[in-house]
Image: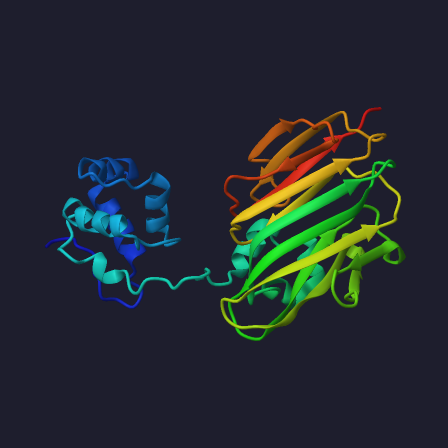
Length: 303
């Protein structure tokens, strides 16, 4: 068949052949979706986009039916796409560690990267965060004095023993920072004054095998003075869930609050909307889908 892309080269993948066929036939993803719906197969535009980018591949029975239905429309011989799918990803599969994705969130040559040097793109390469929950307390002096974090992680390599955490602080001083864990001695902290950050290696309790999970809990306290105006989380791999819960002291209530999302640390907000406080002087952020980027809550103080 003329103009059919090769399917036996070393760089040939399901995504590359699917993408080339779309371009050759000048078909939009909307047309593909409508064609599948006409065959009683429902596949979202987001899923089709993931297929052509290589972010995911068809695996479920309905998705495999979609592949069979697409080949005639794309002008491909029967079995061309399905032969490129390979084995199904095992339970607990995680995408490979991608230093470019980390820089995509922090930005090129960020302050944190300058401080950590060659270690920056590789910290926590052997773990994937699944769930993160943060409880932030703003005291009567309008300062974040306590952050409690619970994180569920999965090992992608055997033998990993700790999770490295990095937190940005407002007006930090090394002698005013305290990090504690509920079990065992407090881990040593590394104060990074160049970027107003603190780093620590939180023990997992034991060495994890591949695909094992662990719950990591710690509390970060700071006694420094200064005004806090926001708290955010840099997410470098997709999370199943992220919850940020901020509580304000009754004598230090903000005049307004916003929830926001940025694709990059120094980028403009892609989403930003006003948030209200409840009767307990708290607000929380719970994204429906937590893809890489920066999630946070910011607020302004009355004059």
